Each structure stands twice: as C-alpha cells, then as structure tokens.
Image: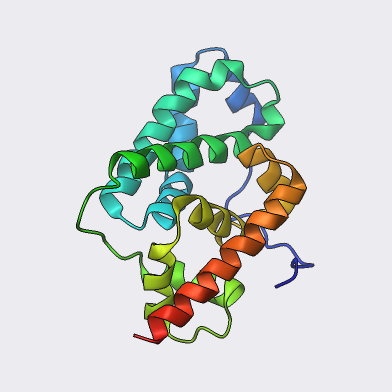
Length: 190
C-alpha cells in the first residue's frame, strides 16, 4: 500500500501558542485549558491503540500527568501537538505493558475499525474480522497504524512523534500493514 498523496484536515484546530507557552511556565489554568481542548483526542488515540475503554482512560490520564511534569522542557511550542501525541503513545505502551496479562479484552468500537479498514485494508469488508485482527497486533504496530491512518499523520510526523528515522517509520508501517492483512486472513479462515 503506497503513501497517500493527500492529507486529511486536522481533526481539531491548533492550540493558541501563547496558551502552550503559559503552560510551559507553570500556569495551571492554561494547562487545564489544554487538557479540556485535547482530552477527547488523547482518549481517542489511546482507545484506538489499546482497544479498551478503561485502559484508554488510564492512558489519557497518565498522558496529561506526564505532560504537566514535562511541559517545562518542551523546546518548540510549535511542536506541541506531536509532542503530546508522543507522550500519549508512550502512556498507552506503559498501560499495555502493565495490563498485558489481563484475560478479558474489550474490542474497539466499530468506527475505529471501519476507519482503519477504509484506509489500511480496503478489501476487508467485514469490520468484525478487522476489529479482531487489529487486537492481535502488538501495541507498537497498532500505534503506528492508528497515528497514520486514523489520526492522518504523515510519515515525517510519525518520525518526530516516535523519535525514529523516516525510513524506519516506512518499514514499520509496511510491516504493520502486512501483519494486519495476515491477521485478517487468519480471522476470516476461522
């Protein structure tokens, strides 16, 4: 599957840079405004990666706790969105690691699976198969697919968010797509 030539519009408008700057200097009111503005987006990203409401809530909360602790070290206010997504992906990874042994798994909402199906695996008409297949992927593969296909992040943005080279992003995307297609085929063969 090749790189998409068009880029979707951002899901939400950019934050006022002065708001982020004020939060960087310790302004709790400014940070609370950022939390209100970005809570849904962080939750959506966490849920798409983890596929479980409780885990997604925990990861979203952990994201903002970590963001508050680290925002003073944010060098480029213009990179806040990518920085926050990196913090969210890392929080989701940590929640996933801490809950890896849990026996009960919730299946992600059909809209997440349908959106990934629309972009990542258009031949997967059966959303349930995709939903189940997506759950079998490692969290790192789910994260890169969600950031690219659901959040509409470009490969260069993914490199910044995940702190890896562009070539590695392309390779991981290719690997994740192939793994998703294999998982879909396995699910359909059941």
